[in-house]
Structure formats: C-alpha cells, structure tokens
Image (cartoon, rainbow, N blue to C red; front, side, top):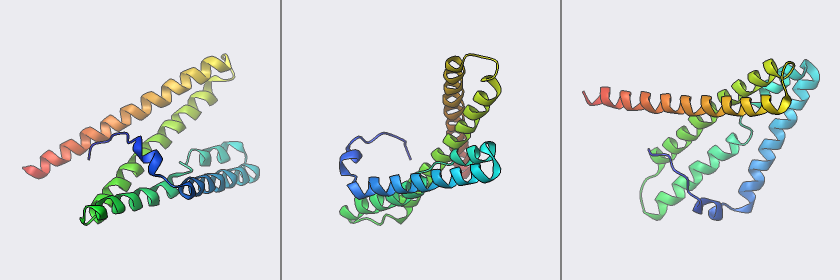
Length: 149
C-alpha cells in the first residue's frame, strides 16, 4: 500500500465526522488532565502523547474504504483493515516522535533559550518520525521479499 495525500478527502468528510474527532480528542485530553492532576504533570504529559483523534479516525478510515470499494462493487474488508493498519502504524510512530520531542524539551529547557529548544525538539520529532517510518517501510519490503522465496 502506497502512502499518499488525498486532498479530495477533506471535501468528502462530513461535519459530524469532524465533530466525532473533536469529541474524542477532547475526551482524551481531558483524561490526560485528570491524570496529571492526580499523578503529576510528568505522568499526565505521557498520556497527551497518545494520538487523541486516532480512535475516531480509525473507524472513519475503515468506513470510507468500505464505501469506496462498495461503489466499485468490490469487497473492502481486507483493504479497509490495511488502511487502518497503516494509520495505526503512523499514529504509533508519531507518538514515539512526540515522546522524543517531549524528552528533548524536558532535558534542554532549563539550560537553553526556549525558542531554540522548541526548534530543536521539532527537528528531533520530525527526524525520529521520518526515520522510524523509513525503517518500517524497509522492514515491510524485506518481509515481502522473504515471503516470495
């Protein structure tokens, strides 16, 4: 499955799907706030690294894939599962990248300019995320080659 951006999907997404994502994101953020209040900001901050809209996005991705294939009169179960799987991998990688961002900020803010720390942390996040995505992609290619032989 090749990853690409579909700008047309923005127009196809219905208002209530955005509302659902907003609701899930708000609930997860509020839960992280409650955890932070009870156990401290360090623990609560870890829960903010959870991709807040992923639960809603996963169900919407599956629904859209099924609808797209149904219009073509094809079975969409496998394709929908693959699409959600790729989204889950991206969310996991993004979460690891955000954890690296948080670590970079946490370790460097006391000793350096906040703007430089944020810029550096953004670069750490982007580097981590892209690197992990490339590793995942190469591992998938390697597994496919092994299956063929």
